[in-house]
Image (cartoon, rainbow, N blue to C red; front, side, top):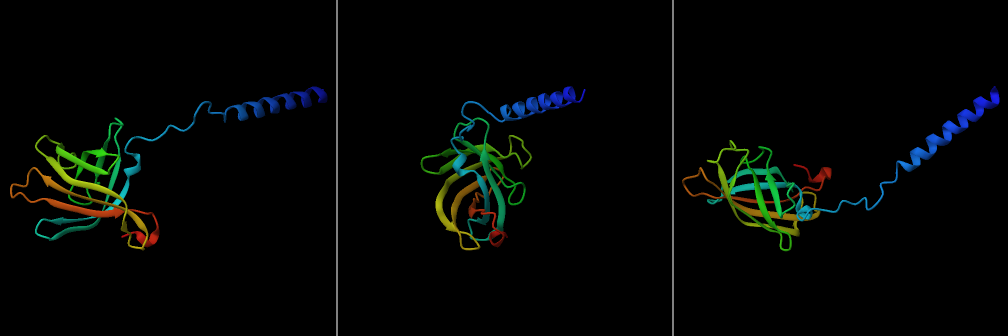
Length: 169
C-alpha cells in the first residue's frame, strides 16, 4: 500500500509541476506595444499664470494619459488640483505639440457649456530641470476657458514628475 501511495504522490507532483511550467508560457509576442502617445504620458508639476503675470497655482500635479482610441489623443487632467481641467488633447507624436479646440472640460461640470481651447501646447524632451536638479521633460501651453468673458488665458508651464523624494512639492 505504501508503494501505491508513493507513486500516487509522485504522479500528482509531476502533474502539478508540468501544469505550473506550462501556465507561464504566454505564447506569441507578450509585448502589447505602446500607443501612439505613450511617450508623452506622465505626471507633471505645473504652475498656472494668468496673462497679466499673476501666479494662480504653483506646482499643481497634473497628468497626461492615453485615451482608449489610440488615435493621437490624450487626456490632460489636474484631478481638480489646479484650475479644474480634464480635457482631451490632440498630440503630434513627431513634434510633441498638442492642442484642443472647444474641447469638453469634464472637471468643470462636464456640460457642453464648459469647454477649453488649448494653444501653443508643447512637450519638450529633456527641456526642464526638476526641483532636485534632474533633467526632465517640459510641458507648456495656453488654455482659454469658455466661461471667461474677459478673454484671459491661463499659461501652463511645468516639468515631468520624477518620483524622487527630492523632486516632490
